[in-house]
Length: 109
Image (cartoon, rainbow, N blue to C red; front, side, top):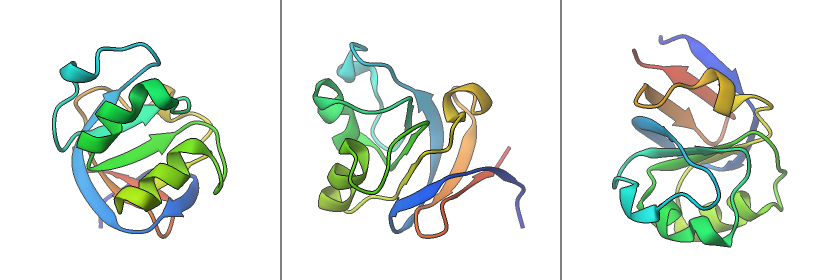
């Protein structure tokens, strides 16, 4: 079993793996790669183009009715919100596994 890196609130079920990508409001969505895991403080409508490409979404704040949670459920991808410090603890390019049911993020090295 891989080490749990971080926990939050599981907001959309499913398991996905990919490279973490810290993404901020106003970042160029065309720079976001298909299958990356979007990691943000919170998502907003300017990020939807990147969110559509994401394997999963992780945010620092938010609840089960927040923007990332609702859009993730609509898109059928795993989402974990309210991790408190995902943008600090998860490094760009790091391979991670997201369990949107349990709200757990695993470091895959």
